[in-house]
Image 1 (cartoon, rainbow, N blue to C red):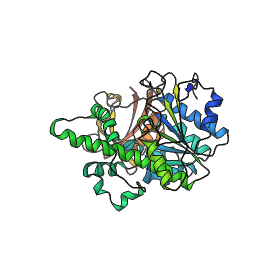
Image 2: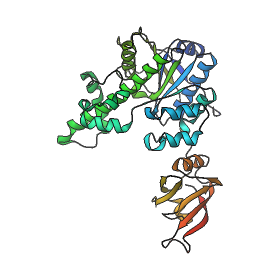
Image 3: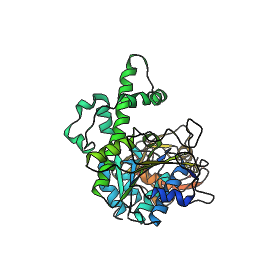
Image 4: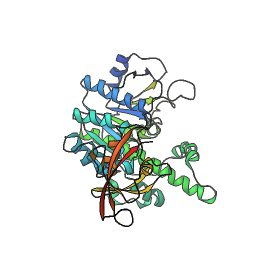
Length: 378
């Protein structure tokens, strides 16, 4: 944890302060612990890590489920936890920076804690190829291959779910007029698929791993509302023949409509064994990462500059489109992910040495010219 970090004040479902020991003792009673986040809030991820550390220290047998990973990449998460691949390979194989895109530094401490303690990491999300196709075509187009993501079925969401999402849709919509009803229908289907897929995957994992407690790391919108992951997980669990599942929600950093800490109203009767805890504390953001100001093409074992940004420190130093990056600050780079991992060590204003290979075609005197540039990151 960084210097100055302090675990925030936990509040129970009635917004009453809880001691740290009471907070963790209550969480330890539940098999499903859902921890919401705003994806770009560093303090939210530190709080998640604190929960994992404390529960693990108390002897709770944990697994960690991530919205950030799509389910087909589960073998890559398993390989990472087993020590068979490193962080760069995990991010590359799971297509992290094309599918999730949030700065890996936010989640890396969680990944490393799971790996160090051999805690299973569970890919929860449904691939975007599926949500795009079914979002457009509707659930009548669900095929045999889709059942892997929805083993308990995929029905249309209830009207209450649709109405709740109208406000959210209005904040995201980019078009109106005659296309708006269709756009809203697609938006609701995608949200529902995310909630159903993550909930069903979580319930299935708990069913097949009866000794494990699953901590779900997902956006607050998927956790704060009872009709999202909580109800859907409880329903899937019940369909597997179990008694009611104990679900704890940990919500972070917002305010409830009545002014108390938290986000929304508590669970309703559809989740009969449930408990809500809210964490309130100051916001923290990641320190900025140094940037080159380039757009990159990455394929195979090469990464090259496709174009320069309007503000480009690399371009100012003399790097041109078509240059293939060889190393940054002495570290070899062969993919977009490796570039991000190296640049994460540096801040705006730092100067790094970059080695490139410049191809023929007017960019240099030889077919393959090695060049070195000192780039002051912005």
